[in-house]
Image 1 (cartoon, rainbow, N blue to C red):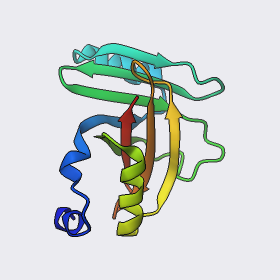
Image 2 (image 1 turned 135 degrees about the vertical axis):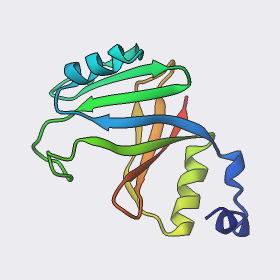
Image 3 (image 1 turned 90 degrees about the vertical axis):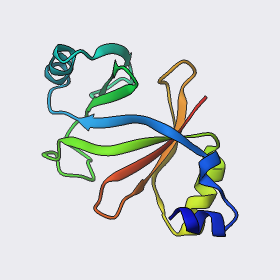
Length: 141
């Protein structure tokens, strides 16, 4: 894929600059948070999104873990699909990344969306990987 990006004049080395977080969908967010805290993760942020959605970020060294709990209704993935379901790559320019993904023929399946996480929030979008995993591209604001 990197050679394809360079061939089209878009050097992703200047766009993707690290792993943003690992997202873990859980059935019981408090139980999951307690488990990861027992392993040394520290609470970093809890998002108040309203409704039945719960999101917590935990940190251990350079690793950020996003725990989230969703209601079952209206899901595009089975409610029993718990566990790691996406990786988030930090990018410097989400709009340019979206254009690049379109050139590669990867449709955006979610976003771009503004999320109030981190110091100033992030904008992100997601594409589907070859095995159904979601790949998030996230630009801190």
